[in-house]
Length: 291
Image 1: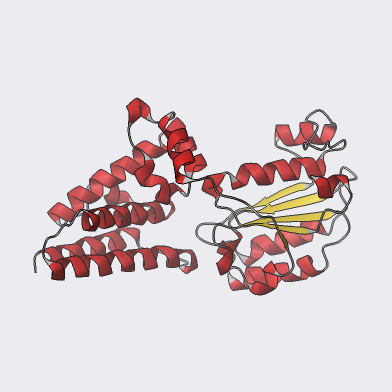
Image 2 (image 1 turned 60 degrees about the vertical axis):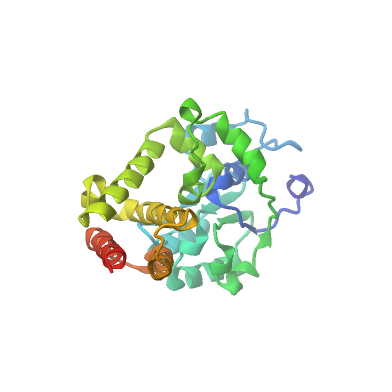
């Protein structure tokens, strides 16, 4: 806010903070302050026309880009760059937020470079990334990084304990949803129940050798979370010393690593046969434990 009040706001800011830790809320606050007509040292005033338009969800100078499936595609970035060349409809800044910027494919990232190099007057680009190391160095070098400090595990645990239904330990799925803020949102709806169901269905599938319940109709939108849940379950087994056979444990560890590798690579896969992928993992597991 000091940079905004001093009139020295950079044209591009990179927030290397996981969405699960509240990155979306932080980006939203920055965007509100940048589009506010009478900002204060604490942020947007909340009363001006700009703030009212954002609250209504229809500010014409605020653009948001999210992954289309697993990727942010070149057409999305080209459309954004074209929009940013137009004149601000409210006479102030134009602000664009790109969520999970590491999901941009190479073509999309390259298409954004020119706008980062020549952003135009009163343009602010906000890039959020869960994994900044996966961004092109040329993109990172053209942004001012906003330092963010993550809360300690103790603070997170205490906070979640107050939100958990009936004192249930929900921290097991933090790696799946990305952080405590996302988990809190899932607890308010059916998201956490769906992850818990995936956990149960994996157990049934691994035991029977066949896909069970929700895994039979798994979608591309669900597959990443499903694989993360399975990874957590396999790691949990290994940590408690199961299976006892060292050779099997070693192979389970390799399978878990392979699952995470596939999970990370899904963002670069244009099409995924989710059911076949899940069935392959179950069969691989069966071969290991029956050997």
